Length: 222
Image 1 (cartoon, rainbow, N blue to C red):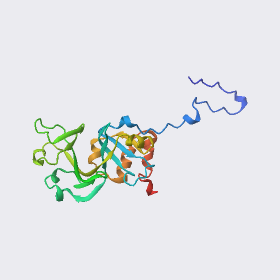
Image 2: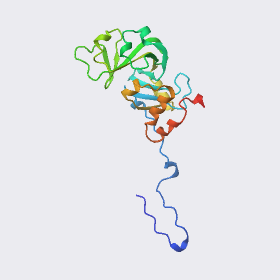
Image 3: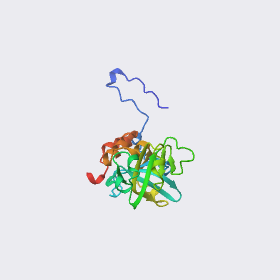
Image 4: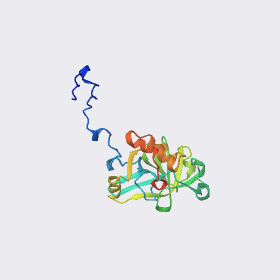
């Protein structure tokens, strides 16, 4: 317990600054960026300013799966110029705006991956939906979209994904390349893109991590 300093003698000059009981090195809280234990489906990997790899600089990645076999996710907020109606016409009316493919990552970029929100899948008709977390599902694009139109409240299609082999993401987090923070279903379907999405996600964090929302999302932008 920090002792209360005695009242100074009024004749001895101005009062001394009260002791805080805290060393100078402890005055500023440490930057908390999460750990590998926080990497779960629905979490966000937010690129820290020190991450200069142009593939991931300034990105926000939504985690789809994490296990001893590695980690899988999709980069959010990278819309392409490819219209969904030109490739998957049956799904375009269910997609949120903008109705384009989003670049999900550098892996298998010719593969389409679809995420949707569904508050309550109908029993016996949810074979096309595989839960990620909460109301967010992976959608089987080989299924009939007409059978899902009364179950889906939002849909977004990604080209490619981001993947990490076992141990790779742990090393990157330890090196300070990523912050691991909770995600929201809204993050998957927001119209925010690029630096705007990065700042929105960082801006809702607490402490020093939230202060970073004023820094450039992409260090190459300095």
